[in-house]
Length: 239
Image 1 (spheres, rainbow, N blue to C red):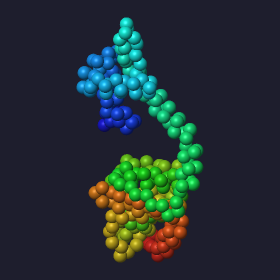
Image 2: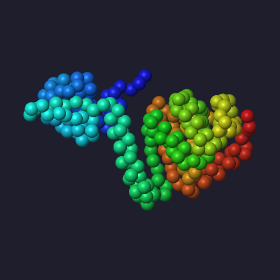
Image 3: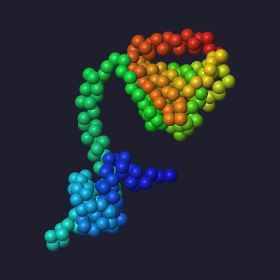
Image 4: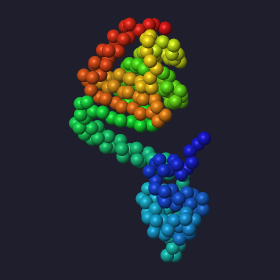
C-alpha cells in the first residue's frame, strides 16, 4: 500500500498546518486566504504563516486581483524539485561535516539503536564499512523479522563485495546465500542476541519484541572478538 500524501509530506519535514494548506490548495485550486483557513480548519494566523513558508519553498504562488491575493499550489512536480534542492544543499556541506565528524570521533564510541529502523541502520553501517562480516548467534531473526530488507541487504553485499561467515548452533538452517558461509557448533544454547564483527566495529543485535542494537567502535575490541571468532570457526563443523 502506498503511503498517504500526508505521511509523505510529514517525512519531508512539512508541519501539520503546511500539509493542510498545501493539500487544500491542491484540492480547491486558486483560493483566498480566509477560505483556505476555513477549508483547512485552522485559524487565520496559522494559515498565513503556513502560506508564507510554502511560498518560500516555491510550492505555492499567488496573483493579485484588485487588492486581494489568490493563492494556488504550484504543480506537484515542484515537490521533486524541492527535494532535489534539499539534497544538493546537504551535499554542499557534507565535506565539512565529514571532516568535523572525523576530528570529533572518539575511540571506543558506543551507539545505541532501537526498533526495526534502528536495526536497519546497523545493517546499512555494515554495507558502508565495506568490510567482511563475522557473525555468531544467528537464529534467522533477520530474514524472519525483516524479509524484504534482508533480500535488499543480500544484493547490497554483492555490490559491495562483502562476504559473511556465520557460526550457528547445530540444528539451525539458513537460506542459501552466495555471500555467506556457515558452520555450526554443538552444545550451543538458543539466544536472541546476535554478534556481528566488521572492520573496527562490533554490533550486537538483541531480537526481542522491539529489537535493540549497539555498535561498539574500538580497534582492540574488534580485533579480540575476531580472534575468538577465528578460534571457534576452526573447531566448528562444516555443513
